[in-house]
Length: 260
Ligand code: HXC
Image (cartoon, rainbow, N blue to C red; front, side):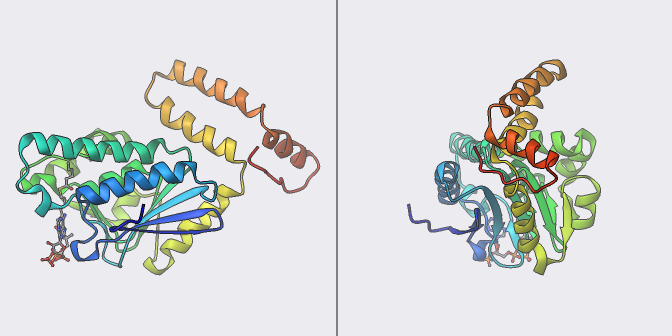
């Protein structure tokens, strides 16, 4: 499907998805969400994609939120539907078996912050600004922000952001654990690609199972989660990558993982 609001680039196993609505600060309207969903369905199966990076076009915004102009006249039922569509998209991102890195190149507000929260790792440019400013519009976060933000940075800090609508800069986002690291804007994509390359150099089954263990394990109690971890740990021993990884270590050489 050709996309109107997304640009997709691929090199060396890394697919970069660029939200491309610069005139609206890459705000998420319905079409953009549908395109993102379609892209993730495709990328999940795409053999040329091992890691996905999501970023925004231009230098000012990652995503400045859901599209306020498009939301303004929604009925309550339409608004609920729009929120559900967003949830579905964040779920595709979160449940994608391939790692997803958000390269946050400016404002990540409202639905933009929520989309970053659906990603596995967030790298912030030094001009990044995160926030859940929905209360300024008389609404609440609707793409999972009330849940994922609290799970990532804790209830108190999440409530402070959500109730005040205040933005945090890159340094503060790093301090509170919202961003994994901060880099100068001009190094943002390069840093994300380096991290992606490091991940790609590992056994892809191990990477996939590790993501699955962390993501699903956090949703259940510790005892069951550890049980689940041991099942996935056992599964690693059905792969050629486990044999290669351990053999390479004992032979004091670099492992050559085949993703098998
Ligand atoms: C639609 C948006 C937009 C948005 C910016 N624009 N954010 N359009 N939806 N979320 C548009 C502006 O209207 C303007 O269009 C252009 O982008 C440039 O924005 P400016 O405001 O002129 O730029 P600047 O002064 O630099 O301020 C940047 C900003 C500000 C701080 C990011 O635009 C802002 O506060 N935006 C709204 C952020 C927000 O409230 N996000 C949460 C949305 S609610 P024109 O045509 O005038 O040039 C949400 C809910 C999610 O996300 C859940 C839904 C279910």
